[in-house]
Image (tube, rainbow, N blue to C red; front, side, top):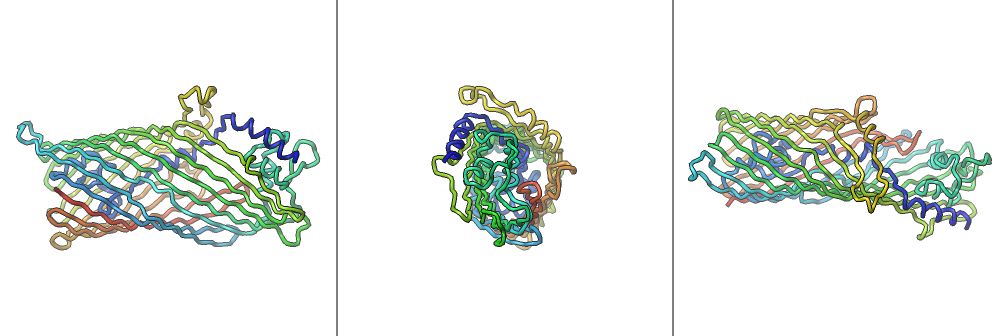
Length: 489
């Protein structure tokens, strides 16, 4: 019981402490955004900066809505399948996760204003929703290793009184009798024998995404020059949880047979940014696009909790419901802006091709405390975390290229490719690699309706470090099947 009392006093102290859990990983997660949208948009890898005239094109260049000469409404659906192959201690484990979403919906109202005789032919008011990032996925790995998460938890408590142990890690291990004092008077040690090897299993589940609601206005000047701008309201809903289990060697002389540790982080919030763009047609076959995306300003809230159960030969030890630690913190995040240059080539009635070159400086990420001093009277200045962002991240150039070919009257086939370099400097990237996107699709168009289908494959590899000395390697592939129906009126 004395360990429970120690935990309670520590928890009460901790719940009023400004835990700075936010770091460079969070900044990258919410700024390393790629593209999702309609089937036509996806089948060309989002390369629409100079083409426009698609419900999702405004997330690249808002002037793209200026290419609409008739009012249009469109809706899309997709099925996403994520395949994660984990490798750990020469053991391979594959997991799959599928989900159904509505990634894109929008409406454009186009009005003929040519009778004003000022050169402007049409203006457009548009609204769209695009799910610009998808976090859904499950990853698993397992294997036997001569190291335990308990060693890590014990190290966190070195020099600390039991009243002041980190409540989400070391205190849980202490209260479930997974660690004990090491005998020196100022340290802790795992209740394991020195020769024990632990069979470890970890399941990581991520959920949620980022959705953008965009309010767009655009103009068509003499069918040669198009202007556009929009206000984007972004909503973040992110969940990251893992269950870590370890099973001891059956021949071990230690009291611990196994233990389970669970951790969950949830992030919710919203932000806004502005986009401005223009498209110019110097000739009938050439289109040039330029777009600027401002920084995005987020207000976010993190909620996190942890739990632990230890199975020993003498008993099973759990954390009582009243002693499960809970953390909450509000903060702000400013993610970097973008510049996008685009070139489109039109092959008469045969098709088109578009190239987007996108510049993003990830060093522009910045964490900030909330301005609510009643909530946070002693806000953290995030000086260390922002210095870490400047030191570890770099500017990158993203590339997207897509093409559309008319194979028969009203029938289209499309291909696309995109390359997104990893945002970390080489010395910090580890095995984190660039992300590549391959896409294709078909379309059918009549006078007032069109139906499009797309398939997109996205690959990336990375290392997952559970703690020092325990690293799993993952190969991820995400498949998207997208269908879009659009109606012109």
